[in-house]
Length: 180
Ligand code: FES
Image 1 (cartoon, helix red, strand yellow):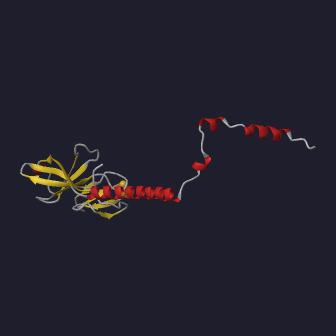
Image 2 (cartoon, helix red, strand yellow):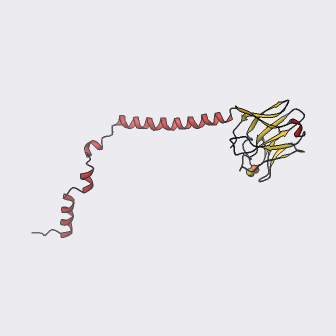
């Protein structure tokens, strides 16, 4: 008669008993493993819908970012305090990013967010070239439209809506993009 190995015997005895965790969290193994094909397809559908909704949300938010919007008009400066060809940096309440106003000619003013769209350095107005220049990596934006002219930036500067009234120049909203 062969004698049972004592280690094997101890293991067998040990696993005869129900472990403590199994008593605390009893699981019906037969039912647990039954995920029907219909349930699986339903979960798959839900997950796909989740991804779709997320993507649509991101797309919609980017759409709203490029749509113009208005806010309470705020006077920036008296017309006569800014000479033709000069610029003036100002702040819009509620935003950290400063903006830059440029007087292009007697009656035309434009304003843009002052942070370069590459790595956020402040752009400066270069009167002779009529560009907004970023000294950090030599990027440049069109002084009239804010579009990229050259350098690393890939997006135009955020553009503000400007109104020129008899008593001054006002900012009235965002024409494109958003200030930080
Ligand atoms: S931060 Fe303006 S070009 Fe890089």
